[in-house]
Image 1 (cartoon, rainbow, N blue to C red):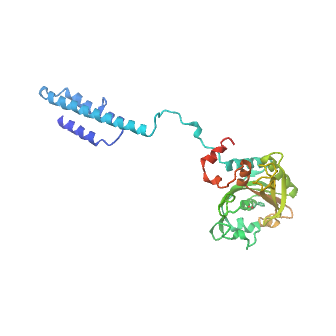
Image 2: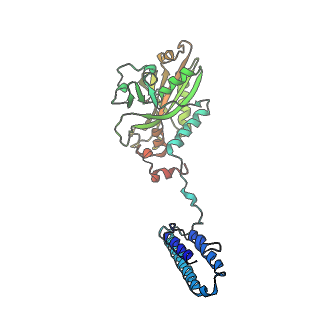
Image 3: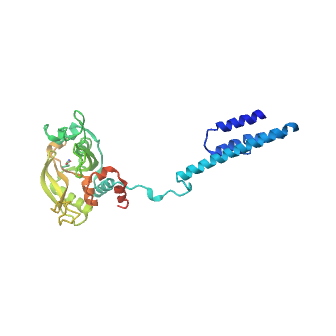
Length: 333
Ligand code: PHE
């Protein structure tokens, strides 16, 4: 029995866990090692009882002291880490909010789906054909230059616009098509309050028989009124894109000053929000669609630009910093 006592003392010294409950279970509980010895004590010869009894009691005191020590340590840990009440409810106001770009993307998709557009997506890494050649870009166009575009390897780049999804869609689907393509795009730009090396666009494409510029204008007016309010006006200015002819850029009346003039619209009362035009016949031909039978329109808008106007934010970098002080402002948006 003396050997057993020494053995338990050694085990208590070597006990590796910091958890007081584990210690108690092993040594001090009703089925623990010390109780086992007390049970055996009943069978000990009377002349040995005195010495063994003293030793056993000393062992028990030692175990209890160690147990108290472990408990005190645990208590200290909980106080130090301020976990005062582990049964306390989880704070309910710490759930996140939806990113403003997601909010605006969803709203754009909703507006267009109400008039028959469906949503599709394409890859962010594109080949030269879908990004430039099929879209009627001439070989020497500056967008093909490393200065403007991030190339992954020769003839493969991070897409610079979502117009590449127009080609993917026309190649695989039969006309008529009426779709929008939201997605992320990349340009080799210096980062500033107004420009970033990545941003988001929503592309629109409608190809059918007898599609005219008038249809395009009507759909864009509907979009502007839904997005910025019923008093919003639009204005189309002639422009140029290799893949549309004729091409235009669209301005809306500044939703921040209501068209009166402020620093967002540079006192003009108008803000540009998208590029658009009639799909160039060469683009249709590149996708094996006969331009003498079909025509179409396309448009592309920046989600950040629209979000900045809608929520009156003045720095595009805020959209990528993931600062909760910015993001949490969109909780109830
Ligand atoms: N892809 C053009 C851009 O990124 C926008 C655009 C889309 C223009 C479709 C015309 C038609 O600026």
